[in-house]
Amino acid sequence: MKSVITLQNGKKLNANQFISYFEKKVFYTIRKYNLLKNEKRRFNFNVQELLIKNKIGNTRISHESLDDISLQVFEAFMIKGNIKKKIKELLPIRHKNKQIIIRPFYFMTKKEIKIYAKLKNIALKKEKRETVLSLWLNDFEKRHLEVKNAIVNSILRIEESSARLRSTNESCHHH
Image (cartoon, rainbow, N blue to C red):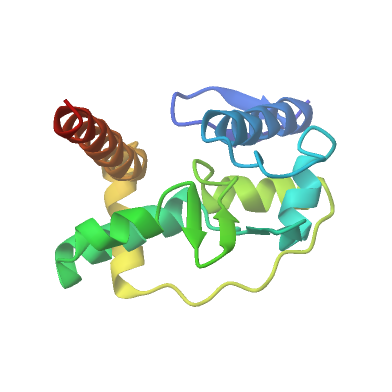
C-alpha cells in the first residue's frame, strides 16, 4: 500500500492507517476535553460528520486546525499582547453567550485534515489566503518540528494552572 503521509516521527502511513490514526486522535480530543458532554448522541456520530457539519444539536463545530489555533495564539502573544483574554477563546471547548463551540480538530494539522477529507471524499471550504505570519510559522515548523503543538499545549497548561489556582483560592476563602 502506498503511503499517504509521513508523520513527524518519520512513520509512513497508508490510507487505512491514516484514517484510523486521524479518527483516534479526534476521538481522543473529544474525550479528553469532554467536547460533546451536552449532546444526547455523543457516542453515535463519526468524524466525517464533524468535518461536514457546523452544528450537532446546540453545539457549534469549529473546523479550526492546530495550524489555525497556534497562529492565533502566536498573533495574540506577539502582536496584540492580550494573551490572557485570548486563551479562553482558543481552548478546545468554548462557551460564548449561550453557545458552546467545540474544536474536535484541535490537534490535527491542515495537511492532515485535507488528506482525511480527500480519502473520505469530503469537499472542504476554500481556505483564506495565508498571511505573512502564517507562512513564517509554517516555515519555522519545518525547521523546529512540533512548534505548533508546543504553542497550543502551552496555552492548555496555562489554563490548567489558572484553574488550579482559582480552585485553591476559592477553597482558602471558604475556611
